[in-house]
Image (tube, rainbow, N blue to C red; front, side, top):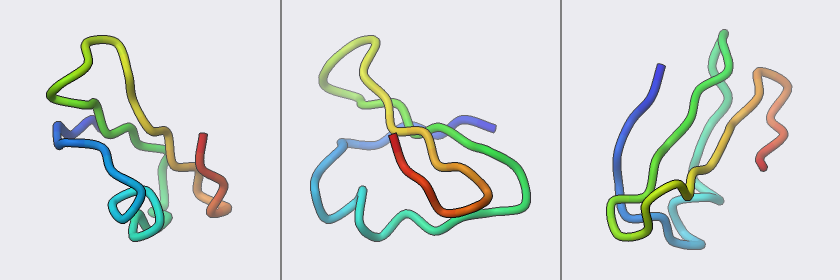
Length: 43
């Protein structure tokens, strides 16, 4: 599952794990995204 949003520090810290891995793509910088793992790891 993917979403689109302006990636900020606050958004990265607020991202909560889900049952499956998901990604949030940055709307301002093409190719930049935050991946959130089910165990809570963010990269």
